[in-house]
Image (cartoon, rainbow, N blue to C red; front, side, top):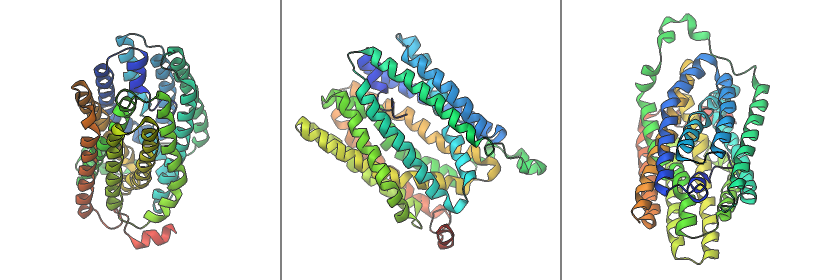
Length: 393
């Protein structure tokens, strides 16, 4: 992921020559495609097991990356982007399901946090590699990067085979006719899950969705900084996650999960304010301030990522766990479709300088929804159960 995570819009606009509107709208449409496919992946996970779904997703994602690397026309770009959207994000829900099976429920929060740290270690390293390889004036460097990314994705699938004994479908509920008949209707009627998804959605629009949609574009076109600086900034982000995650895990154990996620919204608001303020700074100072801002954003991530998946998996019944994780994954898809569309409106109308502030306010709104969610959760679901904490320790 780290090899190409921050370069989507830059690749389409600055390298392939497509308009900013086309790139952001395509990102939005791609997110919608990923959103529409998410329920299918969730149902497939419950029926076939997370391992088979993840293996299929990684192989097809590798093929999609090659197609994207060779896309020169708008039609080719659309096809490649849709393939990436459908297969590139398919492994997240199944991987959460698999991880929740590998650890006791009292240790899930720590497990998700530790996993997030390792993911970002890979993203940070990938960002450094991409910063060395890519050159916006040499399209071949981007093609090499995407093909290399495909090879790494296939290597991931090979490593995944070592877990083949743990990733099968759940069959214990088949003898119960009531549970066997349950599906998405039960999932969508769970008020707690619906509120979690809504709160996460707003927070994602004020965070990851807008970061992916417009950060690199803002840095290159509004701040007039080098594309190589983006990789360095993301390195600060991921390095902070790697260094801080274990420390944060110890500090948030036993704390209200909704309060922790609300704290994330405040940190992300600060990030967007610093990004906006960078417009009036000299280039060298702007780069330094944005590296600091990415570190602040990262601290918010270390708070959010352990508690969000743990909360969803605590309220999910085992035979519907794949669907519950897919529902949570919808927040990424919807945010990934709405945030680029919103970003595109700002940049297309010459209002890019106002975009960071409005995005920061959106993050704060997500935090308020998180605080409202708290009263609908039990102490254990919210992470405040003392017994669970003692068992975890």
